[in-house]
Structures are given as structure tokens and as C-alpha cells.
Image (tube, rainbow, N blue to C red):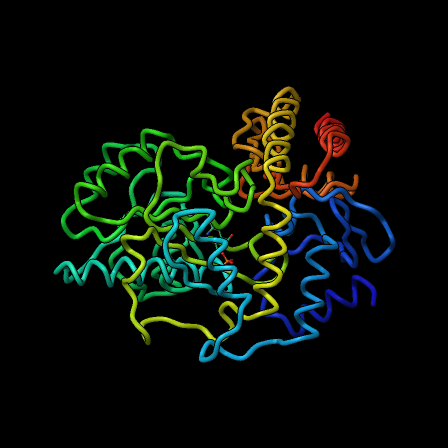
Length: 391
Ligand code: PLP
């Protein structure tokens, strides 16, 4: 099928929710993608931080095939090992409490919101509030949309759930002021990804932690994009002075299959009772086997060290290019703002034509999220394409 035929199919049968770039990818391996004409691309987007272990990692492919050939699923009304082992692995590698497995990022965040609200009701709070930051992205369900200030359009999708309060992302005092006796949780991405890779300042995170402690509220970190090694540690909070009470993960967790998780610290791990929450596919064996194999690949000190090293190298080389006004991020989660007047979509389009896949999170901004298995040569190749495209 040609690209034009695919576009016709899309126009006729797919709801128009995406603005796609004009390329059909048909194969991936490690850091590389190939299009339908056999052209090779260097992938600095990794399916939006999903293929952190690289495309079609043999260990993940084998785990999926093995489990798919043995048992696809039995529902959560019976026992099966992979989902519970993945919960164990996530808990032991992060907050140490119980885990709710699910299928996507927004579901992980919905779980965190429900957990925080139920806990608040248990503390006598009738109308619990969740404090979020301007610029945040927590998902597109009604609940997580209400937690995503820039997309929470009452005029389009209202009535949206109430009980969300947004404050500036760079103002510790405003955050402290917003947390009150009604606050059930403060929900933060340690680095805002969809906004264009904006790390949240340590003072804001510290203010959130102390305000939550004083109010008895939960600090929830959305690590859906920052987690799974993206910033050079398995979870971004490991490089910060602040530890959350609840953490959500998804994206790279399933190595390409849809897996999400909400992890609690031990003191808030038993908020739910049977019937409070659930999902048909959650923790199903094939997806969980993929998650376990992905953690085998990514939870590796040497890989994580390299992600920090290569990220620093890429960021500093990018910052030296003319027409790059600012570079932000940590590890291999890198964002850049272009010089005034440059069209980021045009720049990303030219990079794609030159064989480099990058992303445009917003006007004038670029985002780079390569697989963590890139090498020095890949960093050099990406910088060279960016140099050519920008000059
Ligand atoms: N939270 C963050 C920080 C994200 O980046 C995303 C997706 O980009 C989500 C939540 C929503 O995840 P999903 O698209 O899997 O629902």
C-alpha cells in the first residue's frame, strides 16, 4: 500500500485526532527505523519514550513470544505469575509499597487520583482537591484532562470533574499557598515532557513535599515519561532530594506493549479494597512478561550511566549549534527552544527528510527522546543532522 493509499484509509476510517508526518515505518531494530521504501532513519523519539530499550530488543521479543505461546490471560479473578512478579519488581525498585497494574499512563494517573481522593475522604475531607502545575500533562481521560490545565477545555469536553487546582510551575510560594486542609494530593511530573521538557525546580519540589507533609496530603510523581531510565536513573526522583508517596509509570514500562502502573509507598498502599478499582487487561501475562524483560534490560547501572553521559554530551553539542536558544532536560530527555523566528515543524520536517526522527512538543521547541541503547556514533550523527538542518 502506498503512503497516499494509507492517507486515504486514514481520511475515511480513522477519527482525525492526529497530525501525522508523511512517512510509513515498517521495521525497527535498536536505534533504527526503516520506512516502506527501505530508507533508514535514526530514531531520536522512540515512539514517544516507549522504546527505551531500542526497537525489537531480542530479549523483549522472546519474552513476549514465549508468554503469548503459553498463556494469553485468565482475567484478574484468577492468579497468574507475570503480573504479580512485575508488581514486585516495580515496588522493590521504587517506593516499596503495593502496586496497581494497568494499561496506560492515563489509567495509572486515574488510579493515583482515586487513591488520593479515597484516602482524603477517609480523613474526613468531603471535597478533596488535587493541586497540579501549569504546563502539566497527565492524560486525556476526563479525570486526567481536568488535571492537565492547558487541555482542560470546558467548552469542548465539559462538564469536567471538579477538584483540581492549577498553580504556576516555577513558584514555590504559590504552591505552598494552594495546599490547604482540603488537599488530597499534589501531582507533579518531575520534568514536564509534553510541555517541552521543563524540569521542575528543586525548590518547587521541596515546597510540594513539605506542604504535603504539613497538610497530610500525598505527593504524587507522574513518572510516565521521566521513568524507565529516561533521565539516567530508573526513576527521575532518584536524582532528586524529594521522594513521592505515590508514583505512576507507563510508556517504556511495557517495552512496546501497553502497560501502566501506580506504585504506593507502604503507608498508603492499602487505601483500596476489592471492588474499588480494576481493569480487564491489567497485569495480563503477555504485557507483564514484556514489562519484566524490559526492566531486565533497562534496570542496568551501566546502561543508566551511559544514558546520563550520552545525554550530557548530546545536550552540550546541541547547545553549541547556532539557532538553538536553550537546551533543557536530564539524561536522554532533552528539549530545545529554537532562536526566535524559526519554525520547529519545518526544522523537524527537514530532520526527518535527512533521516532523523525528532519531535515538536510546542511552538519553537524540539524534543529528543532516543532509545537508551544509543552509542556515541548515534549522538554524533544526530548532532550532524541538526547542524545541517539549522544552518
Ligand atoms: N503523563 C505523562 C507525563 C505523559 O507524558 C503521558 C503521555 O504522554 C501521560 C501521562 C498519558 O499517558 P498515556 O498516553 O499512556 O495515557
